[in-house]
Length: 186
Image (cartoon, rainbow, N blue to C red; front, side, top):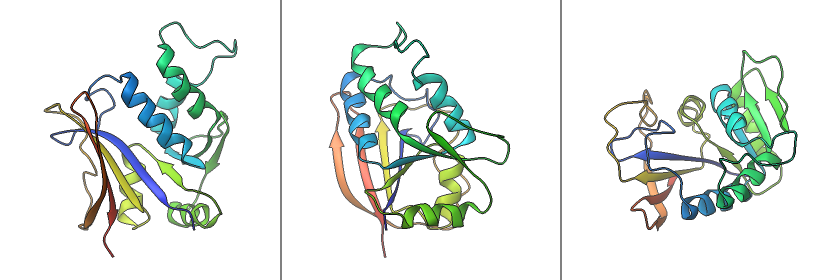
């Protein structure tokens, strides 16, 4: 069974809005690229899928936009080619190497986890909350940004049951951010 890994940037005060932390730098982009390449597929809710597609889908011209730094291109290429599953009840279809997931999200994700492979990666806010509540997340990775946002959506807000975690790895960035990886305790 392949593990489901939840990864997200979060500020010290728990904000997980995608613009609340430090802007990406070369070191963090290398880190996220390696994490993405470790996954067989990405699992997104509609909002995260649409946000990531608008930022990282390769233009039809085949040329990355001028705003993109050279060190962002490996990440862009990795996410562009990755297999994606999109959980949505409102989208009528998806492309960008994606497949729409409908119906019972717990059963659908359990089926995806039972397929052979190295693992699945989930990002975003709403879908991971539902998956955490169902006990389907096998690993949590928080890249804690040295920022106090003071607003915005907070990490796993609304989780009803406490999830005990054990630290399995940490990585410190030059920026002061710290990546913390946890697994649920048995």
